[in-house]
Length: 279
Image 1: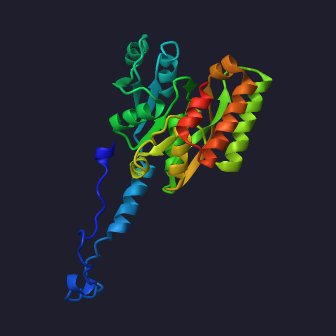
Image 2: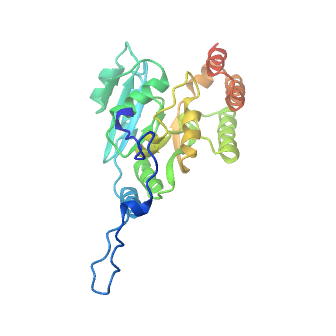
Image 3: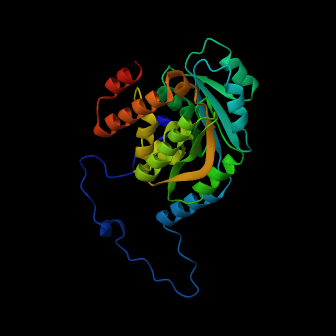
């Protein structure tokens, strides 16, 4: 992805600014009633290009990071299938049948160094699309998701977004977690990665790609995108597995997630947060 970025156009290093008059010593002739229309400015052309991209059938790439996900990857890929959508599985070294099942389900598999941030970056670099959607392997997209993403990106001010969130499993404690997610979005406007974050390719390139961190790279990504424009929080919910909550205890996991969020907000060293969280 980083190879795609272009260096900004500007003055040469050490050069002096050149007065505008030096570039145009002869005034341009005035436009008469029969004169052809003046060519559009670069800014106007760029705006029209952005609007055309926004309103067209935007090409979307879905990037799914995996590690030992043979039991879930087929269903996740099936949920992501849609016209004009490329599906890329960024595998971090699975020793089970994850890769084979991903290929059989119609995805392209790329190898990546283990670690979610590194895998997301590898998948995004491999994608050829106007927008990238990052999907956890235990999360499924709803019907109509691609149309919802394209509708959101029809607004040139929107640089990305995320979906609403719900668990696949029943239980009062899990409903409490869902309520907490809605409260966090209402107060901070920062979605987590299990809400299927998506971004315009141009915005992702502008922030330098997926932020590389050992944990909570999703919040880094959402915050960086929000500095570039607006995040659209869609009403359609993705459905994610509560397997980690159920394995570790719902309330205990909720408490750890909340403390990790405070640590992230306070700027605590990310490696320390990761080591504590994974104990």
